[in-house]
Image 1 (cartoon, rainbow, N blue to C red):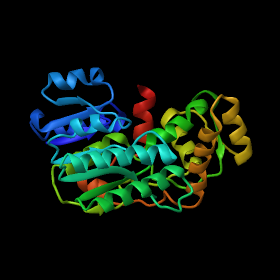
Image 2: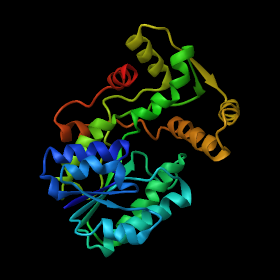
Image 3: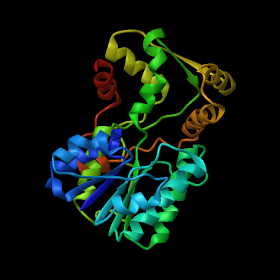
Image 4: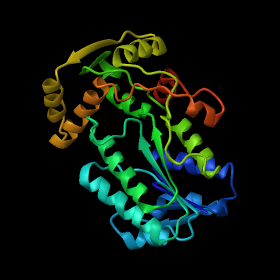
Length: 286
């Protein structure tokens, strides 16, 4: 049985759908905070159990019988994130899981300028210490994140953000398909994978050009100072830690942490990954 955490989220749900194309439903289980949100999966024969990263006993029950566990990284940062991951990894070991796969990120490193990448590096250390077979999926930076940064620009036509660097923006659908391929081909990767990236690395100057071509509207790129951007984010009601986290993305991009473009994702899914323009057009049309 393959157990997937976070199976009602963007990546987890897509991965479950791709697994169900490859496996009988009774070989797939999900661990979710609210089983009601996965009722449709239960109706299709998927085993649905409640699992909360803040309740280790629930995780042990949710992971029962797991030959493989897909640990989808938490939407938290810092110690809170790593503590949750530690609880899940400990529960997987106690449940007798044969292998753990973890959704890490390209650029994962203890000295990354991006807090989430430091959290990923610490989680990979925890996996390494288990002695179990494990795989860290070094996912490309989600294209959905770039689109979040573009939300105000959809109205104004001005992409006003801090100085950045090229990022290999990557679509959730392609990453989910690759994850399902790895889960159903046990042992394909041991430890961290190569970067699983989209076909090109774009900075926000290039993103502005892409948005203009996709929409037929002009888009400009305005470079804000880090301080001005932080003040703007705070003025919109975000707490200071979120503002600092957002700024750290740009600092890491300037440091070249997300520039790698690698063919592994294309090899896994058997085609070229979606371009950023394709993801943008699909999302904005929806």
